[in-house]
Image 1 (cartoon, rainbow, N blue to C red):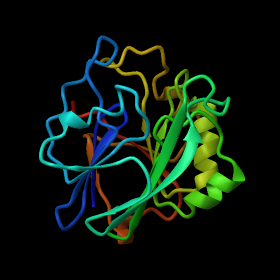
Image 2: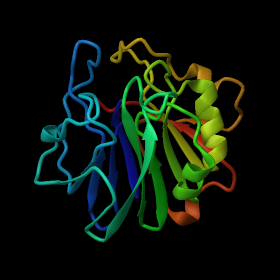
Image 3: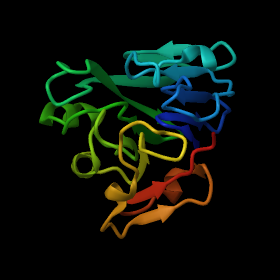
Image 4: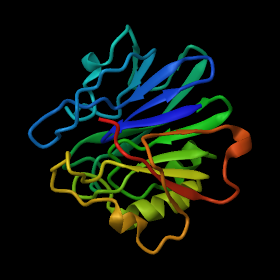
Length: 213
């Protein structure tokens, strides 16, 4: 399985059989200046209906859009209801955490999670190999809360997303706060990693990717 960070909360996940999944495709804007998404996919997941996460028309091909529990091309998607804030969605609405398995590796995309997970949500998520988690704060959980969520989920690979970069000028923080004081950090030279069950780390490893767009 290959995981490529397009930008923001958008990833391209490619299975060994060629099945392609795009998560939370964004729309470029004054605050989000990444290049436009130019990928084709079989499946697109949407965690919530905000323009920086639901631009499904940007994805080429004829992908099936997943917004809840579904099974597409043999991949089961589990949708765990959460909130976009720490007030049960009262400020920014609802958010969906998606869990799915590709090539025997369970991926959890946290969308715009806005709070620490409840015991019921942790139970619903279950065992996770790869956690894609927002760390920038303001619109989502911040670095400290993301650290707590990573501890709750206990993923083997943790990939930060939704943080400030040169092309993201939203009022959020960069990834440095999340990485600070942590010894288990790999700064990947590019935008993509390839994982198999045999190559998963024995202990949790943070992998900081570079946006490809």
